[in-house]
Image (cartoon, rainbow, N blue to C red; front, top):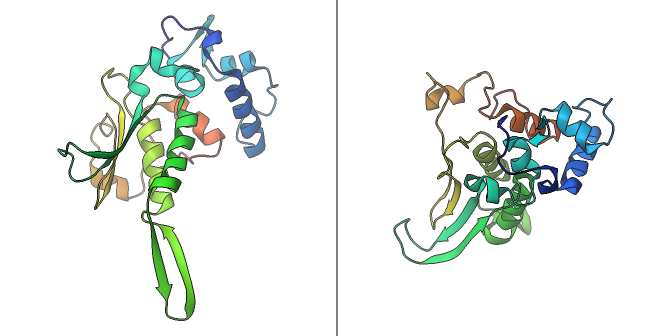
Length: 213
């Protein structure tokens, strides 16, 4: 993420997205409040713009067309009618915006396309509707897949697959060395694969960076 994006410059970044991030960080109070609203100063301070070049992290977070430079940043959402080998999809879309926009697009997709369940409780005649999957679990899965994936592999991407009986969120990359899946269920240190991405999401209030996920 600290490597510079070949062929890209500041004109390839969306200034409105950067300014929006500055405002959000000011609201959360988790960033350096001494910084001004100057976009160049902001990028340089957080290591996203070095020696006149933008970094891959900057392109992923603020790029106008990030997939043009980093094709593996794409996120694919597919609704399968049956199993993964089924040739019929109810929905299939590839998202190519910067990762902050993608997170919002995925959230909007879940609100529209994930069916809700209706629950009736004994002492309440009114129906209660809720998403088929817990919002917190969906949010955690999507953010982890986007923030902590291994972007070095140019053929990798994030896939959100929705089946009649389950939902799968997959990304390219493994656990840190010597870690096992069961280690995630106990207290553990936060070891983000992409610390610049993780720190920006932390400052904007998306994650806590303490290993609770």
